[in-house]
Length: 85
Image (cartoon, rainbow, N blue to C red):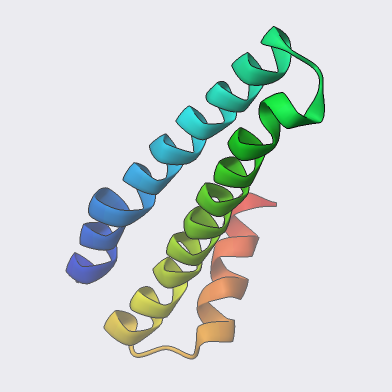
């Protein structure tokens, strides 16, 4: 029923979340080693890129679910929101 959505979750969203976590850990390490911005700016930019990639991947979940369930995107988001609030 939600094969494309689950596939996207497993193959895109979760790996993007792992990549973001790794980038955040690298940033924390770089900042801990040297608090001067020149020491951690590159790591911060990488973490920002990874966060953006994760956000796009997460957004794609709702799009795929709406297509597979033949629902309006707003309806999918409302249904999910009702489950998590």
